[in-house]
Length: 221
Image (tube, rainbow, N blue to C red; front, side, top):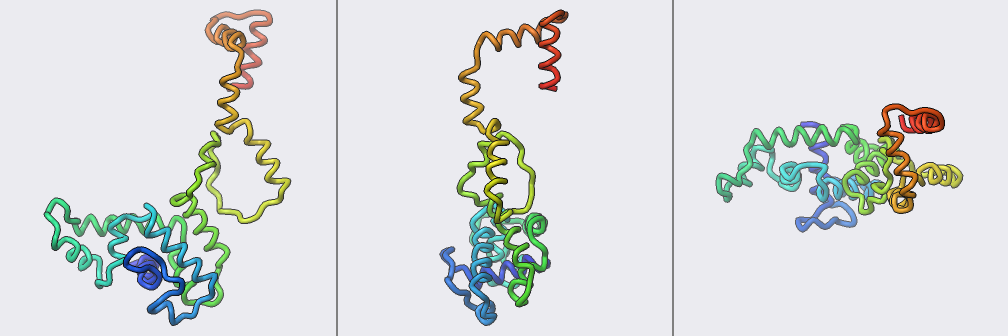
């Protein structure tokens, strides 16, 4: 089993109570590591992401919470009291967890948790950026960026930016904010729009009409 899965389970056991709340400081095996507060906070944010979003399946969460030794034993125990139509197929469970592994590895190195838990020095800045990106994708409370009609590129989370760079960005995106688009739509002159329809629907144009059409074509193509 991949390291990120086995150690996610360990983090879950050491930081999360049965009711889903988190210990301020870990218990169990991780408690003996005497981790720094930064690492504690990181692991709590990580396990909160894992257990309280859809980044992994409910089957994986079932396995993370259980103390039984294998996926097979967890699924068998889960199925005991359930009618057949509600039971989880073991092969399906393994496939779901394999799929979850691939989702996690898109964000996190397989050895990330082992480095955070077991090494005093690790690429903590990189791990924090990866975690922040996953939190944005799966747990962001405020989807304000959805109001931008542009497709923003997938890039690492950046924790600092010069004021001038932010102001330049705001100027660039302003015409592409839904609120701005709505204002423009509500205040377009019908006469102008009607003329656009004329230019687009007339097969043969000449003179100023042809010049206007060519100008629009350059802009819109």
